[in-house]
Amino acid sequence: MNDKKQLLSAEQVDFLTEVMNIGAGNAATALTQVLQCQVDLVIPRVFIIADAKELSTLNNPSLPVVCARMGMVGDVSGGLFFIVPEEQKKDLIRLAEQAMTGTSQLWRAGLTSQESDDLKLSVIAEIGNIVTGVYLTAVHDFCRLNIFHTVPTVATDMVQALLDESLVRLSRQVQHIIVIENEFVVEEKLIRTFLMMIPSVESVNILVNSIGQARMAMAQDGG
Amino acid sequence: MQNKIEVMMGGGAVTTAPHIISSLGLGSCVVVTLYDPKWKIGGLAHIMLPDSNSLNGYHPPYKCADTAIATLIKELRSMRANPRDMVAKLVGGAKMFLSSEDSSPGIGEQNIMSVKHILSREQIPLVGKSTGGNYGRSVEFYLDSGKLIVKAIGQEVKEI
Image (cartoon, rainbow over all chains, first blue to last red; front, side, top):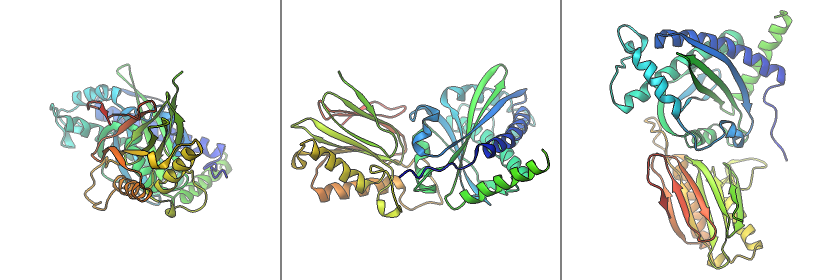
């Protein structure tokens, strides 16, 4: 018996992609301010993983990544993960360190340029915090959902190892994961990041219905 | 020719020497291997949950510890392996993120306890393990020797 169901229709995925596009544009603006240099965004890709096994979207369950894990609370509950492949971590941190001076946001967040590894991971957490906030604002504005994220905890390890406990806790049966792949271009470097949204089993219907309704409303407005 | 079978999260496989079964990216999940050293037949399950009673309806056979081990035993028996000769090894069950609000045993620890309990009930000895901690692991199971190679980022490769 195949209990894999399409979480969202193709049109709904398109709509969600447009919402995330706007989120991504705002994220680029926010990151430009945070990193104090021009951040451009390659159009984000949104895809839905309907089965935890398909997590090999990231192609390699043992891929080393830095992961900022946040809780999702409000109209939709669950988990949020901001993921940066390990090989990109150095670029991102170097850019962030350049920006940790004066009155920059990172400096105000209490981060200063130091050698400590923990602090470097805090940089990723803070960037994840900012990017996630921007996306959830877009979701609020377009889908009328109040979703908040909790303070990130960050770890570096194999990507699947970092996700598996949350996958199991949030839904013991079918897994629906929304993945937003963002590529940012900063100083000619391409930095690939992922934001994964895992709604809890209780919240999945709320999320789907809100997206469906918002999409219908937009279609009716001729938008 | 030696084949490498890759087992994904919630999956399992059985095979014979000279092949290899591998599974990557274990966090709270556990890998259990069963091996008959006489016939060099064995199987690997990548288990996500300690107990299938928490699930309704259909679920993949290797996803939960109880059904996974039962399935492995059944499959190996059908290949003429002898349960009395079988030995088991266990890898994984880490707690990847420390959470102050969450003092209950994590899924990792529950998976470890569940597997140990079931193996003991089946009277299959646990002869090797690499479990717990706060880091991810990948496993390769060599059917010619029964050996497991366990890798973790930033650590020496371990052989159990």
